[in-house]
Length: 341
Image 1: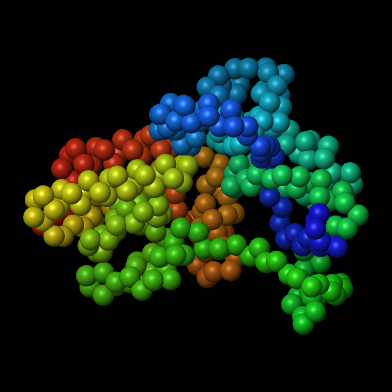
Image 2: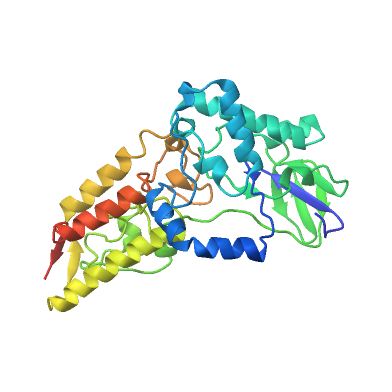
C-alpha cells in the first residue's frame, strides 16, 4: 500500500490478526541475547510452543476481568507471539473464555480502523481468536485507512473470473497491473502427495492418506519401510526449527542404531501406528481448534476430500516437551513400535 499507486484487497473470509511489533535491535541487545543462548534454548525446550513465551498459569477464571485486560494490553502491545503463547490456556479450550478474548481483540481492531462498517467486515464472526492460525501483522489494519486502498468483500460480490486486464466480480470489473494470489496451500500432506512414494505392496502414500494422514510419531508410516519424514504430519505443533531438531535427532539415533547393529530395514508396526493416530485424535478433543475451518483440520476449498467436517488430523497438539518425551521413550524401549531386521 505504501508503494503502489492503488491497492485493492479482495477478502473472501476474514481471519484474526494481531501486531507483531518488531523493532530494530541494538548491537548491545544482540550481544546480551547471544550471551543467553543456552538459557534461551533450554526455555524453548521446556515450553509447549518451543518459544521463550510461557502460558499464564494463573487460570482465566481465577483472576479478575481487570487483571485479564491488563495482561492482554501488555501482550497486544508487546513483541512476538506472546498474544498466543503467554495467554491463558483456557482461551483455546473454553468457549466463554475464547469469546471474551475475541471481543477484546475485536475492540482493538475497531480502534485501528477509521471506518466502523469496514472494521466489522475485517473482524471474523465465524470463529474465535486462535481457533485458526493467527497471522501476525505490521500495520495491517491501518492500511485500510489509506486513500489509495480499496476493500472488496468477496463474500458479498464474489469473484467470477480473471480477465486479460483484471478481475471481474458479480457487480463490476477492476483493472490491475499486478494480481497477487493468496489461494492457500495443501498443508502438511501436499508436499508428500506431489512425490510418487510407493510402499512394499506398490501402494502410494497418497492413496494411504486419501482420507487423512496416518503415521507413527509423525516420522514413519506402516507399509513404507525405511521412510523417515522430518516435520511431516502428526509431529508436534511447535516452533518449527525446534520441532525439526527433535525429529532429526531421533532419526539420527535410529540410523546409528541400525548401522551399529548391522540392520537394514525398519518399519512402523500397524498397532503402533494406530495407537499414535488414536492419541493424535484424542489430543484434538480438548481444543476449540477441532472446529477450525483451516488446514489444522485439513479443510481446503480447492481440494476434493478436504471439505469442512471431513477432519484430517494433521498435527499433534501435545506440545514440544511431551512429544520429545515420547520420542525419547521409544528409543529407550528399544524401538518397540518398529519392526527392525
